[in-house]
Length: 162
Image (cartoon, rainbow, N blue to C red; front, side, top):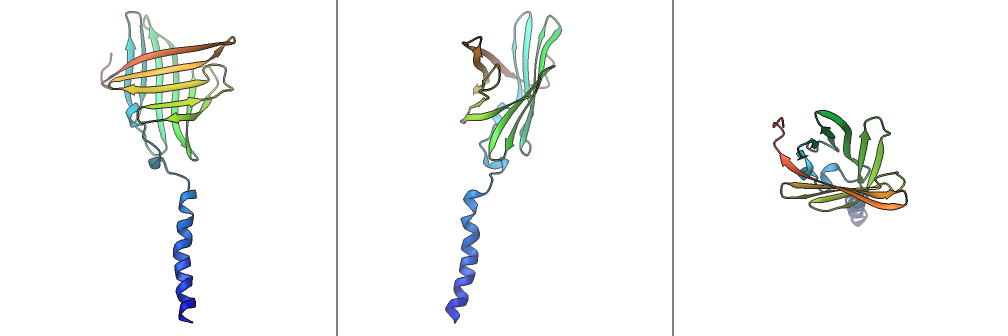
């Protein structure tokens, strides 16, 4: 009779542990993208390209990207990287264009790649950090030709107005 009562509590303690591998990961369980947070820019005599990312809070990072040429903002977009169920998604909202979502393709310590094969261009967005350099690559097909545009940005202090 005593054995009957000892088995039930043991099963109750073990059974919930069986569900742990199937639980949805929390944002803190996903590899960190904190290396992306901060201010990044590329500047030439006639043009400046900037991306600024807020640190990850909860399950989302917010960013903004813009280009200024000859004192005029020529392009800007609002960006998000967030956890969605058990993966990351990248959402780009360019000025006067439709919001587009990209799914996580690959992530490592200093690189993250997102893709959306059904998007016109780009179909693939890659961020890679090496020291104080950030390389952003946009890849995809334009008029049946594979294209890639790469931007090299340098980290700068966010309180720097330049």
